[in-house]
Length: 316
Ligand SMILES: [Zn+2]
Image (cartoon, rainbow, N blue to C red):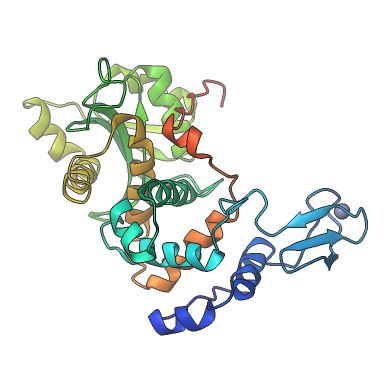
C-alpha cells in the first residue's frame, strides 16, 4: 500500500473512527502483498468475520491480530491506535501516566503494560545491521531506580553502544545492556549489530582484540590522556550518544527507570534516535504499527521479569 499514514490529528481521527478501519489498516500492514496463509502459504482466504479469515486451501483460521502485540486484547483497537498516535507524537517519549490520562484508562498498570508492548515493537525483527565506519564503546549508565527485589539490584548498568559515522555526524545507532566487557560479550554484540566487512573503531581495550579475526577492519585508537576526556575525543559519536541517552533517562523518565527494564528504554531511545530526521508524525505512527504486527505478543509477566539479555552467540 506504499506508506499510507495519517497526515495530522484530524486525518487520524477520521481514518480510525471504527474498529473495521483499524482492522483493515492492520491487515494491509501485515499482508502488504495480499493475504498469505501462515500455514500453507496459499494466497486466498474467506472472511469469516471482520477479524477472522480462513485459508481457502487448508481452512486454517487466521486472525489479523494473532501473534501481534494486539493479540487477545480486550480493549478496542481504536484505543490502541490512539496510544500509538500519542506515543509517536511525544518528542522525548511517552510516560505511562501521560498515556493513561490521554486515553482515559482506568488503570495505570494497563497504560504501563501498553507502553512496554509498544517499546518491544520499536525493535524491528530482522532490522538491518550498521555498516560503513562504526564506533563502538561501552559506558556505565547510572542513576537507575532500585528494583523491586531491593538488595542486590544494580543502580548502574553497563551498556555497549555502536554509532555509524556519517561525515562528522552520527548515522544509525544500536545499543545493548551487557553483563561485562569481556571479549565474547563485546564481539557477540558487534557481530549482531554491525555488518561483517565494516570498519569498527574502538579504544585499545583487550575485549575488542578478536574483531579482525571476525571479518571486521578494526581501527584502534589508543587513549593517551586521562580516561574519559580522551575517549570523548577519540570516539566522539558514541560518547555523544551516551550523553544524550543519559540525559533522556534522567530528563524524560526522571531517573525512575529500573535496572531490569533498561532494555526497553534502550530500544525506545534507539527507535527515536534512528528516526530523528523523519519529522512526520504519521510516518513514525506507520513504522511503529508496521512493527507491531510483526512481533509476538508480550505478556505482562514477561515484561515484569524483564527481557532476557540476548546471549552473545560466539558462533555467528
Ligand atoms: Zn492454508
